[in-house]
Image (tube, rainbow, N blue to C red; front, top):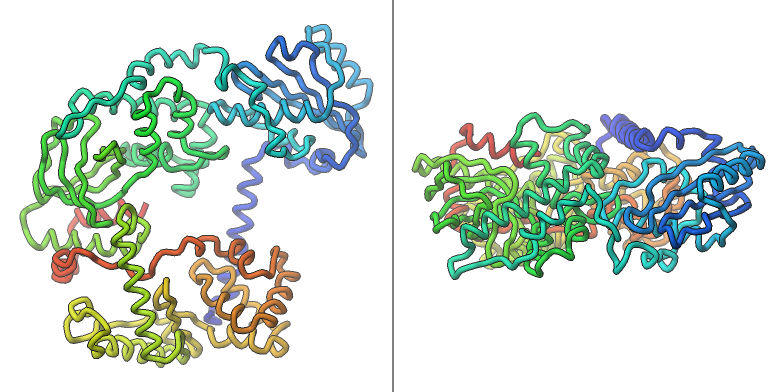
Length: 598
């Protein structure tokens, strides 16, 4: 890593981590910030009693008390669990209590018809943990402070959660006023979707629009308010809704179909769990299939009845897409460009969320700029580029593997080191090598008989220690201070204990811009020294393991699902035309960039 600014960068990263930790703490109930209560809420304190109302089975309503003997007095929690419908309805508790207070609570419960009697700890935990799982399963809102008082119970074992205690036949027993929409939903959910040889009928499109509207209505239920706040913060950095209607529609579509809820799954999956009994098999598959969103920049090829034949310029796949509402005020013409989201529907696709369009002026220059932008989107967002196109993914893997073999053929190694300017010359010589080798590369892909002009960032050029590494998955990348990094593991006795050594090792480990490759290479070359170095910093920094796999899961989990570092363009005409694009961007192209930077 470059010396200049290294400490500042690491300090900023640590501050950001601390800020995240504090924000998570702020998100917890205020009670959990009370240090005395935190100490009292522990299963290490003796369990004095578990109590439950005598007629909990007949009433399908359990009032479960858990009481422990903490150093500063008794601590207890009361969990009100609705076994008929909602699961965990309410929870409250206290600490520093006396035995006389517990006796008074028992007396008041008896007067209210909830005569409390001792029960086994196992039963109390089954009811409470089962109530939480049931509440999550059916999409009801959990009491906010349950995370405080649940600390008095042991962590549930999978076998300890028994949903057979709840509802009837695996679903809530009562249909309350808030779920009266079942009657109206039955009509749109229960019948099979009608199709013709040409695709969906107008009536089916309207019905699928109604299904999507029901899903949106379900997502806007107050029980998901906390989840929406968390999703807004994840998407935009703060729990503030987008300014525009288009932005809100796009966010809501992402929240419903892609955002993972705290209890697991998406809103769409919760909707299916809630109303699955009403759904025909194909509607069930339809709604779950909507989780497979394809976001892209599309070129209209031809209108086709109610549908539009389009090509996604990002993943280079063609789609026939239907609107769930017939866009009577919007006409699609060949050559127009759309950016938005589509979802699968049987053998076709539907528009989903907001849709932005800009009309073609018929010029080659506009197409060239759109194609150029699409190729840049592919490089910035490889997951979008490879989505739903296994051929593109496979050819990209083959390309980067061939690239790696050529690199090793050129340098007789898969990495090289030097000053920044030395590395630039070596990089240029490698590109010339690719052009010269008859079996090396597609000449057109390399720009004809000449290699492309390349430069490196100024920070890399000015560094005195740069590594150029080539990986069979990632391709080529450049690392500052790579020689020093390797030397630490080659001769740890000469480097451990030095501040600059810690900067290099922890910088590589903590940096989001450095992959797992350098760590894996030194672990393979110097296994004993690697263990020694990592254990040294593990003890100082407080991370968990010195095993390379555990270490990468802790610091670089994204590298376990790595995509090729080269994105192969399948459409030669698209690549050719993109090369002719002018540098300046139109306002339409600027809108595309804004869309994909969200």
